[in-house]
Image (tube, rainbow over all chains, first blue to last red; front, side, top):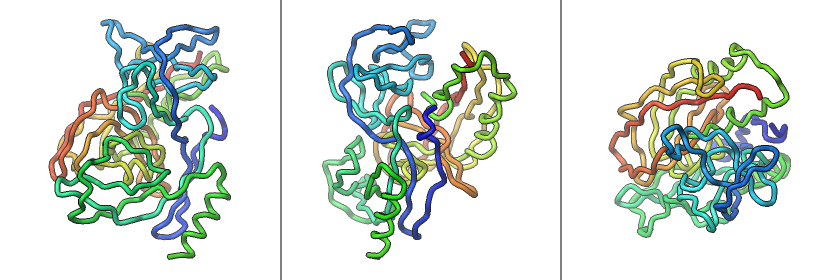
Amino acid sequence: MNPMNQQEPMIEVSPTIRVEKGPLRKRAVATDAKRADKSGLLEMAPDLDEQGKADPTKQTRHAKLPDGTVLARHYKLGFADALGFEIEAGKEFTYLDWMGGWGWYVYQLQDVGVTAKGEIIMPDSPHILKGRYDTADRKAVKTQPRWITVGIFAGRDEALIAAGELKGKE
Amino acid sequence: MKKHLFEDIHLQWFAFLGDQLLDLPLQELETNYTRQDICSQEPATYTEATSTYTLANKTACTYTGPADRSPNGRKTTVDAVTGGSVTSTGTASHWAMSKTTATTYLGAAGSLASTQGVTSGNTYSLTAFDIGIPDAT
């Protein structure tokens, strides 16, 4: 395991600002090529179980991207990517880089809008990738407190400085 | 469902690691990581699992294990959940198990077998699933 990937305790900067370490979200193109290099890694084709079924619970090997990035085992064709969309060959998908470099997330407790159906309206932010939660109906009838990503940093100190600046504005 | 934090431990430098050692993190999960969240996307942190992307949750979840894992290694089974609270409407794609007492941590996360629409105010059920650690190779 990459020692840079080890978890660390969450840092509560204030009752409404916190900093936490975690894997970064990245994008890549999925391929349907199936090959094994000498390390035994395959490109994105899922392992089949005894019944010949591609079961996300029974993946034993890691896929590897052409640039050498090793993915966590559940990122395979036909399975959900990190945003909850199906991974398709030749198309971009989103993954959490559990095996690679982690970053530091800064979160702020905000009142977010809730639609009449009970859907959360996520704020427009470069730090929040649109997943299945994104609703076309963005008319809020009430609000709900949620911790929202307001910054992502490579280093702990950078994150703490940003969090401190945010706290100063409260 | 893939379990990032434990299945991706690289044990390749060891020819052997006893079951009693593989069981230690699994027992930690069983004892302390008892909050389950169903999320709209894969959470990277405890905060994302329990707040940012949560759609539903169940506390005081139980486990059965540790036990032998197939084809090798050890596992624990998160027992089936019923009556979990759906707090937001959306499409659930991932699950997460978190520790909420003392120092909070995201313990494990993975994708659901298939995405599922959930409606705020309803309850959810989830079948039992395994979290495992393969043998050293």
